[in-house]
Image 1 (cartoon, rainbow, N blue to C red):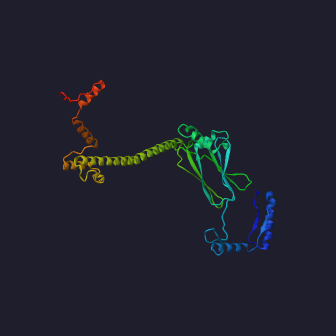
Image 2: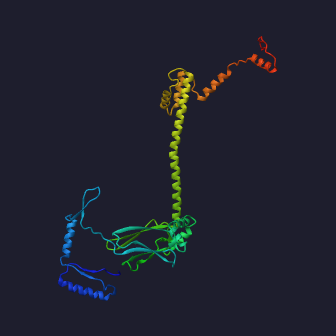
Image 3: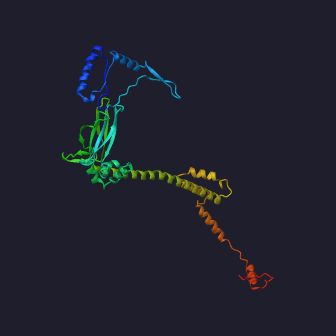
Length: 370
């Protein structure tokens, strides 16, 4: 329906109804589309009754009970009123100079108001991606994201600057469901800013956010939010941000990895010194209470953590024997074993040689000539 649904006369007397009805009929005759719009007169006490009902509801005098599955019955207001939008609000965007306008609805009819702010993100990479295709409306979301990624980075700076300088946006409003869009204000260039040195020159910006709101009366408010960095500055900022991110990751890995390495090294050093102390007791004071007592050895190593040299020095003073590594004790044992004289049974060797030659061994033992 293009026009009002009906005319309602609130709180008029019977004498006044005829006057208002005649005025409304004269208005309907002037507009062809309003000829069939009905007129609904009400009683004179409609306003007073409605005011009384709303007052009773607001004070909780009139309520309805609602029962849930698990909760107790709860009282709710008998009448709840919410404002809804009687108009639709949208934007139209143009990516190429003298190109096609693409319309987008942001707030549709019957939306609760106040509504917003609705953030609409605008960036130069998306504009460049929309310009690169002949029919941007048929692009899927994955194709659009891939095209945006292709235009990012240092290589896509010229294309992004050109797209930002030519991108235009305009707010629209529709007053009837089947009506046409009415344009609010003039088209703007949201991805540009004025040059401080030259007022007639515009600088291309990387991104900005349009925040759109609608109040209960249907008034539209807009605001552009963002730092308005130029395309070159935004590219440098993104690169520096990426470097800071990877540097932070490396530092975090080094920080926590250092704790792991330190813990591993301390545990390994603790076990090594415990074995070293047990080997010392075994070779210096064998058979004592400390010999083989692993718990005592672990306690002493833990007690002298960070100052093991003092422990070794005290042991050397007490027992008069230097503290060696475990393998040094083993090497000493092997050396002592190798220094013992070896007995050679020459008779067996001679007997074996005679047996090989088929000669029976002599019955008498022969003394070797040394």
